[in-house]
Length: 226
Image (cartoon, rainbow, N blue to C red):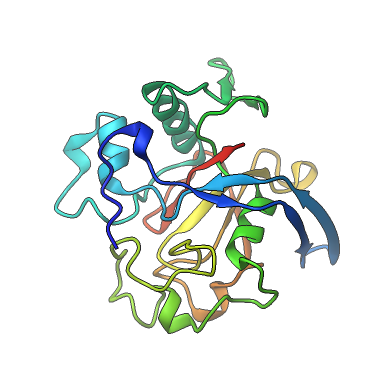
């Protein structure tokens, strides 16, 4: 299936229903439940072609624009969301302080944004309750089948809600701070990647890093509030 983006207003999004999701932090042995309001999530991660086009970075496009963009920090993802929103005639969700790069999210606005950790996990599971929504070989690019590199988005089987690559291919930045008391501004990313072992590709697997961190198996996916 092809998700060729033609105009910003036509960027495809999937409607995700309201519901509840249970999160856990194995580090501190904590469980908690969050209520999810209905929202929209992109069917695939942001591709390299789209990112380079919006950010005017065509020089980094390379040969394959259909793979998820990688080597993008959380701050890069925030900047992209605002610029893509602006070019699409939507309201920018994020206000960035130019002095210290702190970010405020206005939840009442309709622009593109990062999903929360709870939204991401709820959408990943798509009504299921296991660690994965299908057989790993069928749904994900990971260490054993990726040939050591990121793969074109949307080629594996989707989950029940039509979302591709929720597990494997690239880790995906989420909005949330991991643990401000211990890790300061570190943000969460989810989902596993092409370089990850099988055990790291699951709906509840959590990782974190500094918002300026970037690496070759970490990207992001767009959300929008309804």
